[in-house]
Image (tube, rainbow, N blue to C red; front, top):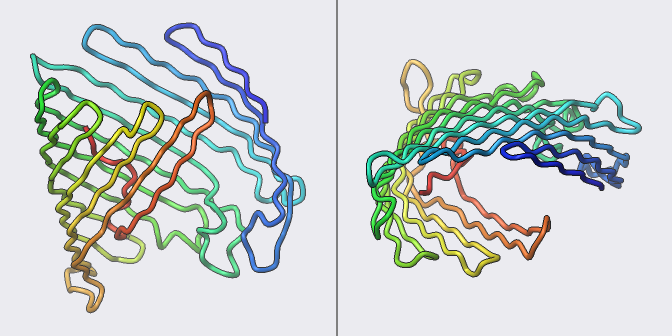
Length: 278
């Protein structure tokens, strides 16, 4: 792997190339090996102007397989964000993202259609309004929309559109530790299955910066999820009432090296694409 970076405020340009030899890239019971070359170019923009911050990033990558050329693909990831402090104690944040990437083969759960060129397209838009940016307490409201679509006809029954809103209170016990309690509503539409999911979550969360190098985050939620088919009859046996949650640990010893561990128990309505944390 090699990487080159150039920066001229407020822009940055990064070029990289990675070479990978995988003895079982498809994660199949009968191993199949290949060499994968990825060449990427990324342009970034990050600019603070008074009480406002603007950021954007665009990345394209050519992913090429030596033996399985039918899996070659061009990955794309674009994101943009804006935040502004309003009056003396408010902050508004707006973020959007678009991505096209080859779905990980281990997530293609059809045996006959596991090693296929299945492009996963994601779109997201998020808004967050915070009151209390300089005190011990904060009130955070959020709203968002996410969509997911697969290019392979075998998997497009998993395509969905999701809307979410949330409100929570955050207590900052120190600069390094905070606790929060809040409520979220998720609405997911698996339109190719004709299934609608209406879900409420009550979240209890904490975020702890263990040191200057590591962070730990945890959320425990009570989830009530109701699944329906059009025009509105409840699908028997598929509703859920119980606990969900997640645990995330990240450690960055220095430079470009970092480690991460994540564990989730979640529902099909709550994709947890982006945590709503102040």
